[in-house]
Amino acid sequence: ATTLIKKGDKAPDFTVEMVDGEQITLSKLKGKVVVVNFWATWCPPCRQELKVVEKELINRFKGKDFVFLPISRGEAKKTVEAFRKQNGYTFPMGLDPKQTIYKKYASNYIPRNFVVGKDGKVIYVSVGYEPKEFAEMVEVIEKAVK
Image 1 (tube, one colour):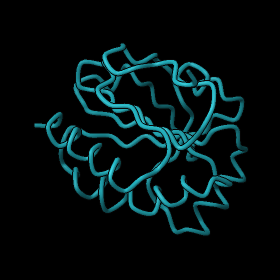
Image 2: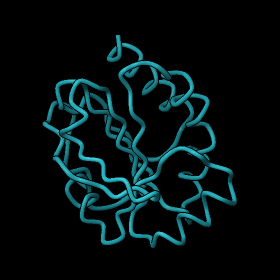
Image 3: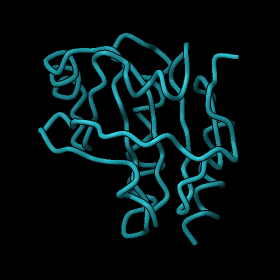
């Protein structure tokens, strides 16, 4: 009941400010497969998942119509910047300090992934981090980017 958006739903549109100040609007990414990932620096499963993202998602789908869009839930920019630096992350990260975006998708629990197909509809939803489930998500993306 904490998941508000289900597989088959149109993904709610939003504009997120990235750590570098860039603004990204979901609807402008139509035609690409987008993983909307909600996470937080204090969340152990989120940290586990972020460790594998670069290799398993970003590098794997480089050059394809794919965007990994991690959005930090309820945290200040300086907290996210410190976390990025500490972990050596270079991929873009979005900020949702008031959980405005998160609340369009869910009411509780992170990490969460919403895979949005090229048509703007959600094709996969996951809560938590399990390597098996993450591998399933990678397969869904693999088919969707073709």
